[in-house]
Structure formats: C-alpha cells, structure tokens
Image (cartoon, rainbow, N blue to C red; front, side):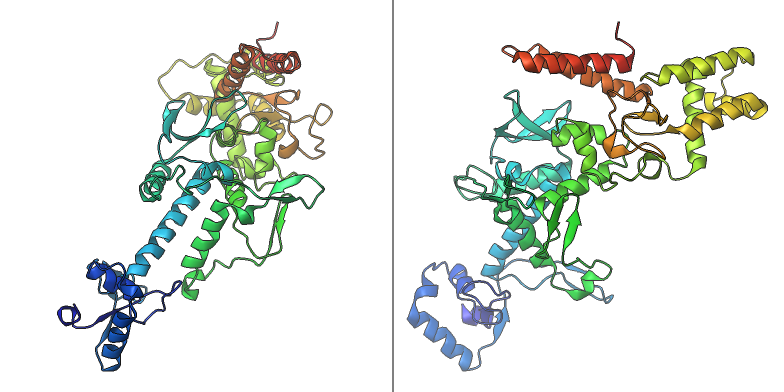
Length: 456
C-alpha cells in the first residue's frame, strides 16, 4: 500500500487519539481493510520506522474527491484539506450539528422537541403544507404536535435520519432523552438547563467547528454575554436553542400575518406570549416595527383600506371598525360620491376623488393619525378606551386584541379571527371537557364573535 500510494497517509484533523500531520493509522486500516491494524504494535512500529527513514507523509490519501472553489484570495483551490478517516467522522458530526441548527432555527421547536424527532414517521402535512411531527410530543388534545417545515428542514431531517446510529429511535440520540433541570434565577421554579441538552451541544460544537478563521468573523463579533427578555447569560454562550426560537419570532414579525402563523407554530396558548418573544419590546410601537416606517406609507395603507370600503370590497370589523366605516359611508353620502364604475383600478380612482375633496382628505388624514396598522389587527387608538395602558400610542406587547374597544379588523384579519373562533368551537365539541374550561372557552367564543360582528 505504501509503494502504491508513494507515501504514508497522515491525519488532516486533530481528534481524540489522532494528531494532525501524524501517521493516520485509522486511514491505513480502512485502505487495507484491516480494522485492528491501528492496535497492532508491530504494524505501528514498522510505519513509524518507514517515516523516520524518509517515506513521505501525505495528508489524507483516501479516495474521496475534494472539489475546487474560488478562494477568498481570488485563486482556485480545494475547499478543504484531503479526507482522512477521522475527518469523515468529524465532518459527519458537523453535518448533523448543522442539521440540528437548521431544524431548531427554521421551525422554532424547543430543544426537547427536536431531540424527540424519530428516525421514522416524522414526515406529515399540517393545514395543507409540508410539516414534521414528533409522535411522542402531544398537544393538550392528545394529538401529535406538528410544525410547518420548509424544504431545508425536511432535508435536514432526512440527513439526520439516514446518518443516525443503527437502531436509533431518535434522529439525535439512541437512548432515552432526558433534560437536566436546575433552579431558575428568578425563583425556585425549575427551568430547563440548556447547557445539558442535545441541541445545545450541537449548536456549541457547530460554532466551534466553523468559528476557527478570524477572517470570517469580520463584522460578526459575538458578544461575551447577552440579555434577551427575561433570559440572560454570563458564560459567553450567546446562541442557544431558545435564542433561535426568539430570533425566528422577530423575523416572523415582519411578514404579513407572521405573528399569527408563528403563534400556531410555537403552539402558544395566547398570541401575547408570541409577541413577547419578538425583539420589539414593550415600549415599541406598531408603527415603528410591524408595518410602516414613515407617515407616507401609513397614509397609503389607510387610503387602501378606505378605498376597499368605498368599493364595497371590504367591511371593517372589530369593536372600532364599524364606527370608522359608518362615519366614512355617511361622509361619502354627504359628498355625493358614487361607487366606482370604470375599469380603472379602485385605489387609483379613490386617490383622485380624495385629492379633489378636502373633506375626504381631512377624514383620511385624521384616520391615519389614529390608526396604527398591524398584522393580526389594527388599532384605532383612543387612550380612554385602551387596555394596553399606552399613553402616546398602543403598546404591542400588552395588546388585548380579543377585548379592546380600539381593535379594527380588515378582511384578511377577520379570516384569522374566524379561524380562531372555529378552533374554539372545535375544542368545545370534544368529549369530557372540564366544565371550568368550557366556561373559559365560551367566554372567548363570545369575545371573538363580538370582534367579528357575529354576536347577538
């Protein structure tokens, strides 16, 4: 083998029992199909003697191709060192760690839920879209918990399932998954110690694997400690499983109906809890974070809403919506504004009418000043009726969208509330539901019906 390869294989990584640049006994054992060679002292002595005599040590030497890429300096070259037998195991671990990061980051699953994803039977659909499930993780109703999954997540699950140990029950582990618990900083209540979970280990190991080249860290300084909501760390570990969950929440906050979808994905009992996960905290306003960043765009959105009411394409629900609609339709009658009749886009027609009518323009500006456009609902802010306690405007984290008199619901938002109402109705139909829970659910049903205008 030495004569055929014109050298002796050398390790390209340093792992337990192997040092980079030294004779790769594991690689030689694999090349000659001799699993016990690395334990034979005579064979090891012979190889070391040949090395001392001047036989070349060649990195890797396994018949695994390494592709060439455009390197940072502009030249082309291999994207990594040649493969040795130990590097295969190390890279497989890194690949599996990356898959755990992708699943956690793109689904918002808790680390314990990811750890219970099975090697089989994890693929499913949820509300017509691709999803994953962990049959041993149940909802309050006893059903399997499900999470929507983008293609990257399903591919990560496939890799983990295909590379799991033989006979493994779970993608990330072969035995029973347990969480160590520690005393929380805020009191005696037990909280999950993330430093002892499989996903946390995968994240930290993956960071250590990729965070080796200072040139790649330009503009990406990881702080030594962090504080996020009621979570904090003094040990320098800024990226934890729950931090990925919080980050996904903040990203979803900028998508249309993102908070409503994320509320389902994270399986929170109340959407206020989902909002509390978002980076925009209690003192931040909707106008700054949810939809618009300047008054011009706010005015445009208000005009779009009013144009829909004028054309008969929209009705405004919520406790404040009908008041705006009633005042607006009365103003249209007073100004003798006819419904749209041409094929020109409705919004373009309405803009022209508003531009020619000082009364309508003043009304639109007045609504724009008080209407805070949101995702699951809008807020027609009146401090005297506000339940969030905001003094200069609504406070997102303390919003009570099923009870506040300032809530305005647009068309798509009404569909979300209707889905919530149907969900409550479905839960109420379940057998053996405790009477106390029925009372709470019926109260919520009445609140949702009031917001939709369906209450008697």
